[in-house]
Length: 508
Ligand SMILES: [Fe+2]
Image 1 (cartoon, rainbow, N blue to C red):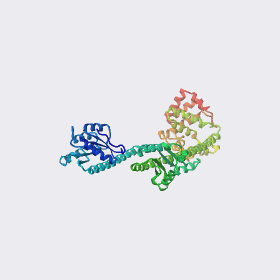
Image 2 (cartoon, rainbow, N blue to C red):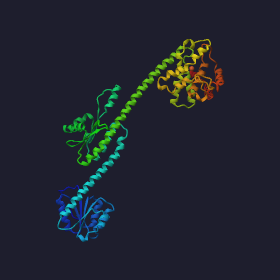
Image 3 (cartoon, rainbow, N blue to C red):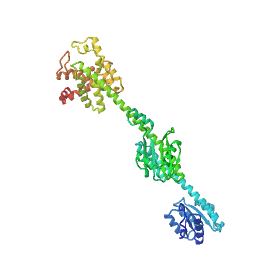
Image 4 (spheres, protein in one colour):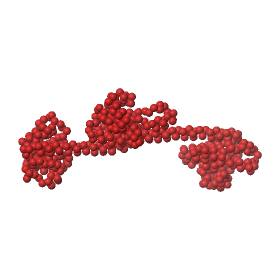
């Protein structure tokens, strides 16, 4: 084994020289070392093969005729595990050169005759190194692109903007082989419009900063990390909207599809052209993911805003309807508390049906407001102790439709409106206002109809005293299948039989 002769040379590319003649090794290594290449010589091809097992070389200059194995066999063994090694075959004489088919099948990139003239060998080595360099760049570029492809789904995942920025930076560093980078982005102006409209202060456009390596820190400490050269480069990159070289790195502008500036990425110590190219490709992806994240938060804010407005509106309307309901209750001392009791009974029945919490809430609101339409019925009719005339009765019969109208004003009561409208329909179709029958009547309306009638029977009226519990139960039985849904009646009866106490709880 022969040692390389000079250490004052670049080790970017490693060259191995294998020849069983020491003189040739001396000549070739002297030539290459003088040209600034790092090389190591071997007289024993088996020893060279062993070295290649553990060490990486970029270029192999190989003698063809050697002992104990020829160059073609050496190449054959190498190619079994390394197809990339650039091989330059040295032949003693033109006639002794291996056939082109052998050179091709073994992927030998070049061959050269041993001669006193070394310029030919030198040219071949230089061209080989150039080709290796290009292959290396292509490989690095491919790796970088693969890495970008791998990173893109991660940075597109919907997550807080700070996490996205950090992920973007984490993916950048291997591409540019740097350690220090930062991203500076501005919130979208639309976000400010929305937050301002919600009365959230302050309304100035906030900058979001994320740094790694020497730039790790908050946005407050960020300005102290910048020198004027870098600040100028950042400003220029944003203004010109193009890649800008800073004293120690590069600044890439980030902009959305419409060309609106989002901010910049700065990476320090990016030397290679391919690194910068990759950074440009990656910055484009990063800008899209940041833009997406902003739009998503915009949607969230708008949704929140809408939800809040909706909740306020709902609450205000509920309050209004509640006032109406209390007004209806207040009109008639005999019916006071009626709607609350209807709610209590209806919920008992609803629970027996196994309704969900949301369904029970719907039933509750419907029960609470079922007679809200009575607000439009004249007091002298509502409070009349004597029997009603046909005309008066017609007026009373309008309250389900009126109630439905009152609740139709806002969409939040959409599902309750038909229940209010149909709480006086009868199972046999002889009810009002639409004469619906059986299962055509809304489920909640069938429950409320039973609860409403039962509470009315159990309460005093201007024109009669309340019925006894037994009589009320009998009336329910009598009306089952004609006035009332028999299944609802049967469930209420079972509930009352099982625990008559529920009535006291409801009527408290
Ligand atoms: Fe009613």
